[in-house]
Image 1 (cartoon, rainbow, N blue to C red):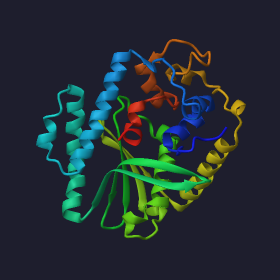
Image 2: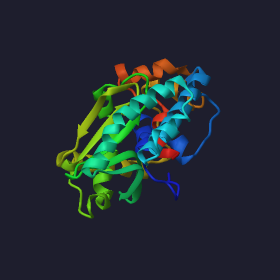
Image 3: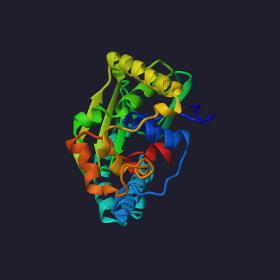
Amino acid sequence: MNLPQDFQFNQANLQDFVDCRRRFLLRYLKRLAWPAIETDPVLEHERYLQQGAAFHRLAQQYLLGIPPRYLSNLVNDPTLERWWQNFTAFAAEILEGQSSLGWKLHPEMSLSAPLAGSRILAKYDLVAVSSQGTLSIYDWKTARVRPRREWLETRLQTRVYPYLLKQAGAHLNSGKPIQPEQIEMIYWFSEYPEQSERFAYSPAAFQADEKYLTALVETIQRLQEEEFYLTSDEKRCGFCTYRSLCNRGVTASSFEDQELLTQDQFQEVLVDFEQIAEIEF
C-alpha cells in the first residue's frame, strides 16, 4: 500500500496501527468514512467531546495571556466550570514561572521531523522552557477516570512527544541541540488536578524510541493490503466505528466501559477528545 502523498505520522495514527492494523488501513489509507457510533449513549459522548474541545481552547487562550475573567464568561457548563477552576489554579504556577523566572511558554505548538523517509508530526498542548534549560511537555487530559501510570507508559504519545521535541525543538533551546535529559513529559488531569503524572526522558529512552518508531514506520511502508489484519483483541472493537464492516458486532460499547479500560486493563480505546489538540487545532 502506498501512503497518501500528504500523509504524516503522529501519535494518534501510530497508536491506531499498533492497536489494529485494519483500522489504520481503513481510516488513513482508504480514508473510509463508516456510519457507526463509537460509544453509547451517543449524546453523552458528543457532549463530552465538545467539553474537551472547549477546555483545550480555554487553556490555550489562558496561556496566551487572555485574562481569566474574560474567559470565565465563556464557561456555562458545570463540568467545564470544574475543569476550568482546576486548571487556572494549576496553571497559575506556570504563569508565575513565566513572569518571575523567565520561563518561555509555547502553547499549542507543532513540531515535525523526517522519520524513515516520511514525516512525523505532533501538536503539543504546552511546552514550557525554564531558565535552567528544562523543557516540560504538558498534556491536558479530561478523562473522567484517571489512567494508571502503567497504561500511560505504553502510549505512543509518551514516546513520540519527547522524541520529536529532542529531534525538532532546537529553536526552543537557543538553537542548541536538546539533550534527552532536559525533557520531561507531564500529564495533567482536569478531574484529578493534584495527581499529575511525570515521565523523565533519558538518552537510553531516546535511542529506544528512535529504533522503535523507525521500525514501526518502515513496517507500515512495506506492508501489503492483506497484511493489515484485524486485532486479535475483540474488546477494542466495541469502540471502533468499523466494527460492523469487520463483522465484529454492531452495538457500541458504553462510554463508561471505554474509560474504565484505561484503568483496569490497559487497553487502547478511541477517545477522540484526547486527540483534539493534535488534530483539530
